[in-house]
Image (cartoon, rainbow, N blue to C red; front, side):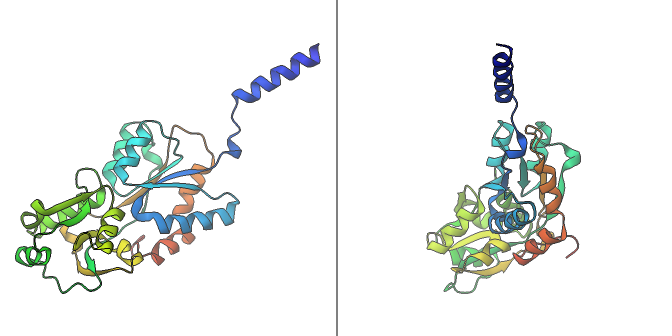
Length: 252
């Protein structure tokens, strides 16, 4: 009888105590980092024996999901504002956040597109009554950076009424590649992975705030690999992968 009761107690205890060591590492990351993060995940998996599981979307969407309790172990944000948002919500500890990369903004068109003059008149002529695809400036970092860059160069009035706001920067990129929109505002790293588009204009770095990608483990989950993966993102192997995809790291 005592042996049976002891066994029953152990079974109940084991059901109440999750074994975190067997839990997969789940990383919520900005859509613009998909290929680079997948390559980093492969490298991390080779080194540790456990490859992360990724969820890619617009940074604002991911931040709100994390705030609502989504099972993310690490958050990789495409800007500081959304990282501050999850920090303020208590979902990420400020002292664990790390800057991991930067990027640049470009205007892209299809490979067969003609030249683009980055003036109000030039943009209007190029669009020809069609729309400019870009991530939603209200919720997505690429859109916010883009609207500030266009404003800084005096181009915003020429395109503000012709925007096709998208849920993330990769949707905007695909819209141009398919020919649905003649012009798109994306990161230079996005343009590099889409053979169907060409870079028509590169925004000067001083036309918008610095583009910052930040990463940090979440506080709502106790996966011990979260801090290890965040540290790996700062290491030389991850930095080399980020460079290979066109991201800027450290003082590049």
